Length: 281
Image (cartoon, rainbow, N blue to C red):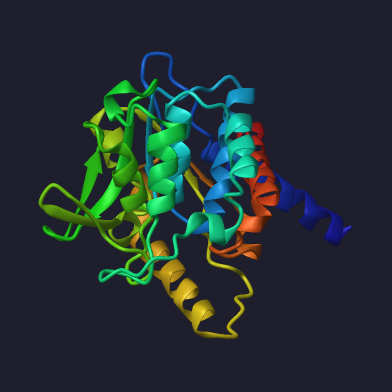
């Protein structure tokens, strides 16, 4: 009897907490902004997340993205459906590292994303212009010339800015545009909600990066990736608190930022995370 009463009390407490912190309802008179975090291969969760939002009748009026979230966000903003983005990944074998990374020496990195720049410019988004996208889109990059984040949303160098947003320093070459050098936006802002705040949008943030409950530490790469996750969790708290909907993709922490061949599984994790979040309403 005592055990049964304790269980009932715990259930009531859970219901009370859920009532005290209800999920905010979508507004009818406010633009909806979707923020897609960085995360390397883990960013494939964004494709499933966008599909789940669509399946619930939610279409963003503004999109911001960082790193892989920038690449996915740019394609979606150009009018590609989530399924079409999955088809592009399969057709161009973007789940293979060899198809993502160009083998060419660089003075500012081990390699670069020149192949992806060419693919965007020649085939995926040939107009190569922020201003011609179907949905207003912001990509977060780090401006090495100023040491600050920049949220780019205008101009005709979309491919370079999107790839600069994903150019992890020390690995990928920083990209020079005009007189400035740009690199991975995740260095300073991996969850770039700032442009959405400036547009007074209802903010839905999809976060691909979660520190694993049981981290694996076998080599230098593991240490580097875990360090990035720790830095992200430490710096992202103000952004997380400012979101109207913050949706972490739990389950993606079983993979790492180089798990490009697991794009189908990561898609499903993103889809399930958004569906589970919305069902709480």
